[in-house]
Image 1 (cartoon, rainbow, N blue to C red):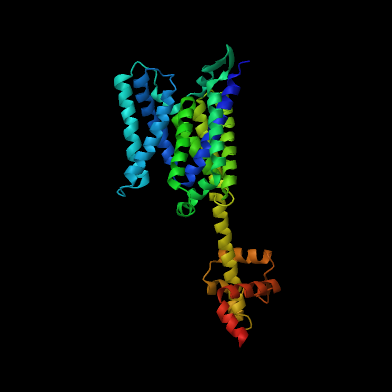
Image 2: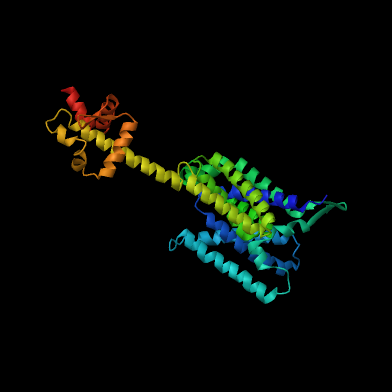
Length: 381
């Protein structure tokens, strides 16, 4: 039976996961914008191949597009190798040039041919199920399902076979060279897979969504883990969530599928950026606030400890005077005292702040950290 929604969902999942897998290594190499470059410049390969074969369905167009992706990488590296411009600037020079040439050629010589630049950029998943595959006269499903599945297999096999090499060359290319690996060869191998993935994906989902799938899931995963294996699995998870949630909301609201998927991915990334336990903005603010409170508590404890058994103890640690000697406001003293009392580190006696046994131990630990050599000298004497 014909189930267009299910087919669209499968296509979206296959392509999203494929892009997320190869995009993870682009992200680690800080080359995510290279995916942007490739997904635009492959249009020039398609246009040039069409001029040669005069058939939009010819497989040669796919090969030419993938080759143009590698040419884009090579030209970018060639410009960057001059050391006159940075790598991102090289990308910014090469891909607009090649993409603009493609647009000009379409406008001049292919105006009557169905090469829609808007569809190339934005894609339209809703139309993907109309391109069918038939075997012996039997409809076996949408062509993009098989393309997406093939791309997924290519990415999985490539990463599985070269996982250690990719990991090492991504984090430490110098060590990879010393161990006998070829970072350049691995680099162009990865870019070949990226080009193939981009070429196979952009007809169904458009270049914008390909870029989103290559950049978004790895970025979300990176904020949640520092291990490459976990990052890959999390990238896959975010890719699947984006494909599923984005499609369902798009169908519910009757809006652009690609646009809603990209928006969903943006919302997921914003959520991770805000609430990631280690690197999230909210978590960072909470840690800074906790560290600030810990610093105030430690300062208070050391002050009380330093003036124990001194003649000035009554003034230095007095309930109504300690703020003046610490140069703190009344609110700061009040909140710090509350934190210390909740942890049973201080108590009030005769209108003075005194340390509990736990407070004395904490003061001793702080002094060991701050003045280890001085305490060792006193101990030896």
